[in-house]
Image (cartoon, rainbow, N blue to C red; front, side, top):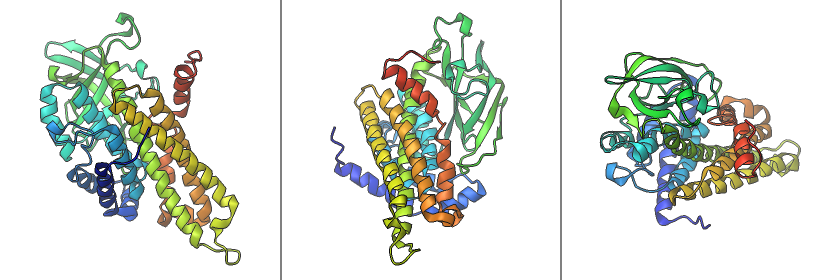
Length: 390
């Protein structure tokens, strides 16, 4: 497949690069140290029309595709944010935008998509639970039918950017497992207000991605209105897959951008630094070969991600491609960043090099938003035809 960039895509990339470079590496280092949400750059991204690249023109988006969004995210992450910047695209144009545009009501689309695209509204998604982890079909949060809608009870964990969110896409059971014909039956999606009686949250201290908080979320008799249902009642699993698989594409794009940034920092240093004589350390194969290996793998993941995004845009199957791309990108980006640190030696460990932040952030994506082991389970079963292992 030909991935030669169109003129429109080239202009989008140039716009993304300019927006990102207006903030730069020091902006992200300062926010990381403070644990502060990157509100200024997100507003600039939205003002430049980059949040709504893959969302409908009718509601303020560009009406383009997931491939275009991946190109934008790669570029923005490469300018300084690293992999964590992609998470803001997950929470907003994916958790909010994909869910609403593909499965929301006309009223939801008209009222919420323009606000999301403009940056006036942020979203989050409540999926992961303490006792379910990667097994999303085992969620126990339950929305019981009431006269005025549903009453939601349960707990979620590792939910991103809750304090900044106005809306939360919540995955809950609306049928008990014993009343469901199959495991995927009886799950529903709701888009609820974060500021609602009975919904509380608390921060989880963590080692990386410090500009986007992670939270425990508690639902205690939270009222959910009928017009907050996303997609068909009891059939939310099918709708959720559109969100999760596009989340993989966004994650991979962010990892590609982070790897490209680390490569640039490492190469610039290795071409200047001289230790033994007049030869720069970049000429030492012991340093250059591992970087070249990781870079090669990252480029392969990038192309697989383009295939996944292109398949999504044309209505084809993209689950395997998005999972493979995420698997290889998470491993390659992490190794590339770590090798960049190794090339810099002690300076790679210093905050001023920026690599230690990229390293801390990239480590998350070896097990989130889905772990390597679960990706390998999927590939073994669906692509190799091996027996289900879990």
